[in-house]
Length: 164
Image (tube, rainbow, N blue to C red):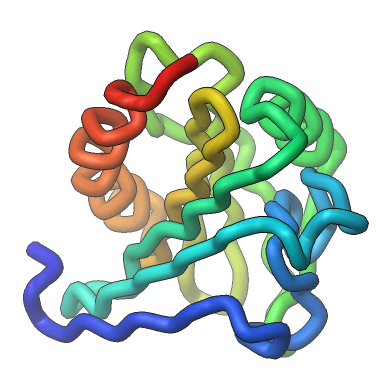
């Protein structure tokens, strides 16, 4: 499903304008993890063009914060997030989503947003000191959710092996 094209980017302080290096975002660029320890965070990102949109993941290894603490902040950010702007597009939170989060990941959360002809969905999973943000965009919410679900199982399997 994700073999059409593969591009990788690393966090190099300007990976995306307005997004702080090493900081877990939730609701656009809004920080959900510490902004003071961002330089100490090991972060990795990968995204794929699927032929129907983009799907990808950002992984953060947090030296001081736990995934549970960051996911609680993500949940709070998303609960209060009606919309955000990115690349001159304003995304509005959809009333509901059908993203099924895997069992065994306390605090995991997901949300979908619509904007300018496409839908972006996000899911956050974590364990120990690792937080993963999965993202997907497609022409409609069903397509974005389908792509996100395809990423969920392999990411959950890898996270499950980490110490809690």
